[in-house]
Image (cartoon, rainbow, N blue to C red; front, top):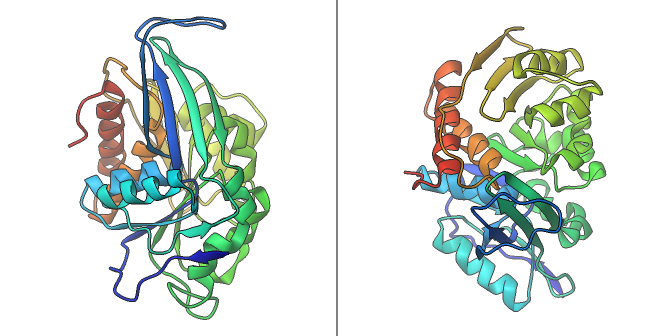
Length: 307
């Protein structure tokens, strides 16, 4: 038996976050690591997934994010739903299945950054467009009365589902914000290059994959993505630079991130995206919004409290 949880008394979300909601299992060591390393460190289990990371950051900034995802009706799923609520993320529209287990992500980080990671988002992929029902059945919107607020999409969704979203009239009026879950899934964002709809958040490597060429700086990559059909893009290049560009202005603005000591990397891009959405929601101009996003990401990777 499957169902979408709902509540007629649920608060109206300010931002919808569609994509992976799972458990992050992260092993961290302060030492530099390489293939085959066996180091002392700490292992943590926290709510994660691109959509969840974005939602948590939005909630920390005082917004009411609502999750559209797939979570199993197993013990791990029940714990995860409870953790989401505790963190201020609405789960009234999460698709829950008796047949699909709760997804997980596992990563190892060393003093020299991310060493390796595996994302097990098979249940999200298997659920498919069932997670979108609230946006098509009239609960939050439909093809004749589309949802008009901001929507954060993550690249853990399948290519076919992302393609469906890019072309579906139910999403035509939404402020779509889209990010790949990893460089390996960057190709899934191609529908948003052909539909000229939405804002893409990618790093330099992901921009290169989408454009099928190598870039040495974020500004060149951002303008190249516009040439490929993107409506608006934000490209980050680690601690070197970040650029924002859109077809409306045909120019790019570029800033250098604050310099910090890196204590963690998993979730940094999601924090950047969420902070940028928050900044624009409160009315910041292009430069101020980019600066705010870079500061939030720098604070996050430094290991300091986010607020």
